[in-house]
Image 1 (cartoon, rainbow, N blue to C red):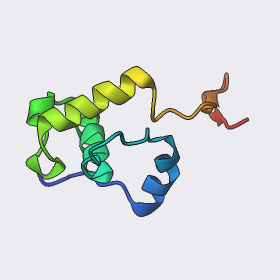
Image 2: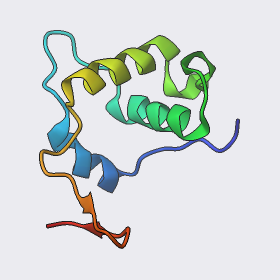
Image 3: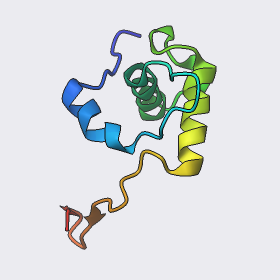
Length: 90
């Protein structure tokens, strides 16, 4: 696969406040893992089919499951779509 997805520095700065705190052992590179999660979901792949450049598939999967269960990366007030389909940021 040659079309890997990598988050930019600006994108990482925007979502970093929503990351949970690390407890004990420092986490593996967040940019690499989150880019891997996005790649897998966007392409409809199985976790084990994630390209090796994103790290171990089990790590990508475990981070996705852990953060999904705790809603760690979700802003408290996410934009809501309006009746016309556009997003209102109010």
